[in-house]
Image 1 (cartoon, one colour):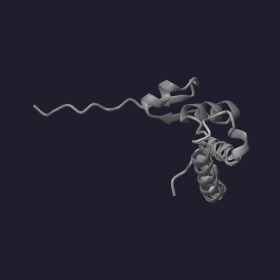
Image 2 (cartoon, helix red, strand yellow):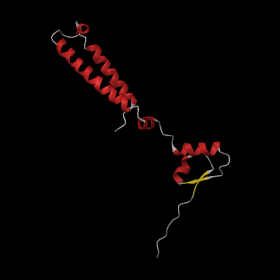
Image 3 (cartoon, helix red, strand yellow):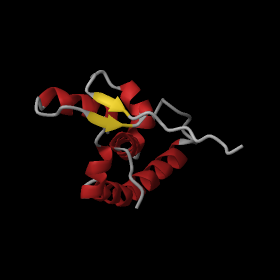
Length: 121
C-alpha cells in the first residue's frame, strides 16, 4: 500500500469535519441564496458520510509499522559517518567513495583514489 503523509490525512479530516458541520441547513440561511441551500446541504451530507468511511481507512493505514518508518526523516549518510567518527574514538579511519568523503567534515573519512585504466597501445 502507498504511504500517505500524515499532513494530508490531517487536512482531509478537517475538510470532512467542515462538511459535517455544513450539513446543517440552518447555518446557511442568509449566507447563500435560499435556492442553493438544499443542494449545498445534500452535498455536505454526502461528503461527510463518505468521509466517515474513508478516514478510518486512512488512519488505520497510518498505524502500520511500515508507515511509521516511512514517516521518519532519513539522516544523510555523510552525517551518520561524521557522528560515528566523533562518538567512537577507537575508529581510526573510514574508507569510502570520493564523493561521500568530500561531503563529510571529518578527516578520518577518506577515499581510495579511483584507479585509472590506460588503454593498450
